Structure formats: C-alpha cells, structure tokens
Amino acid sequence: MLLLGRGRAEGITYFGGTRDAVLSALAPRLALWLVLGGLTIGYAPQAISGVKVLFALCLILLPAVVTYSLAHRWKREALWPRYITATWWTDWVTLFVGLGVALLMALASPRLLQSAMGAMILNGVEFAYSLWLTWYVARIGLLLRRGQAVVLVLAILGSLGLLVLLTGLLSPGQRAWHEFLYPMLVQQGAAH
Image (cartoon, rainbow, N blue to C red; front, side, top):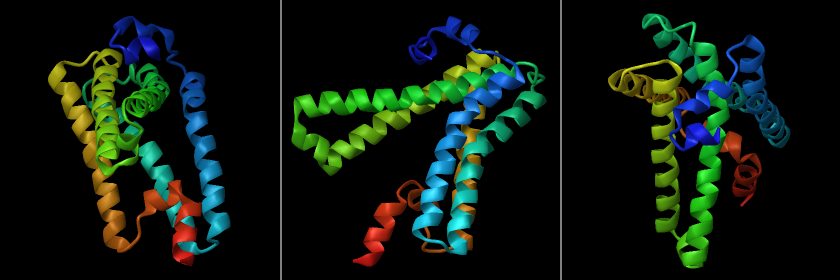
C-alpha cells in the first residue's frame, strides 16, 4: 500500500490477483458498511434508512463495476482482479494522508484545524491525493496510458456523481451518504 501510495510501481506486485484477494480487500469495506448500516437502521428504523444503506453499498461497489467495464473494453480484464485488490487496499492510504495533514495543521496552528479554511485545506488535500492515487493505481494496475487512466478516473467520478444526483432527485432533502456516515449526528440534529 505504502509503495503505491508513494508512487512506486513495484508496489502492485504485492497484491494478489485471485478471487480470494479481491474478497479480502473488499471485506473491511463491507464490515464498515454493515456496522454503519446497523447504526443507521437502529437510530431510524424507517424505510428511508434501508434505502440509505443500499445507497451506500452502491457507492462502494459502483467503482468496481465501472472499472471492470473499462478494463473489459480495453482488453485488460485479466489484470482487473489485481488492480481492484490494490485499489481497495490503497484507498486506506488516503486516510493516513489526511491524518498526517491534520497533525501538521494542528502542530502549526490548532485554530486552523478547527476553522472552515482548515476543513477546506484538509478535504482538498485528501481529494487531490485520492484522485492522483486512483489515477496512478489504474495506470500501473491495468497498464493504461495516462489518458486512459484519466478517462477511468473521470468515469468513476461521473458514475458516483450520477448516483448521488439520481438519489437527490428521487429523494429531495435527503443527504443519504452524509446521513449514512453520521447517523447519530443526524438524529441529534433532528431532535433539536
């Protein structure tokens, strides 16, 4: 993870390309989804909570579907299992980068970390790094040209954006992803 996270291509060789490797990489995401899904339904046992849980599952699995479709189109489907395994594991590196940036900000200026500007900086760095890492792992894992890797990243972003937009159109006023991630905060806010 750390090799790929630092832009070292040899890091891809440490990831398996088997069905078991893919499922092992997916397991932590599904475990987190199950816990957060249970909290969401537990705090608001309504039909909309079930929709939010399914929405979150779609957000987790949609990039895999999109990237497999592109890998198939580009005749790279044999490389896809190793690529998706590496992608799902290296996504966690983004959290570590965020923690590192937050620590540096806290050491430099604790007030900055608590401000809206600090949140923008932190989110901006995490988002930019995540985009680069997605592009890089796609390039290395699927042996893509730079432009193809950009198309893959844009396809992922576009599909996720469409899912969020569709959900917003079908259920105005709902912020499904936010409410899924923070079910207790949403319930506390509704109580006030």
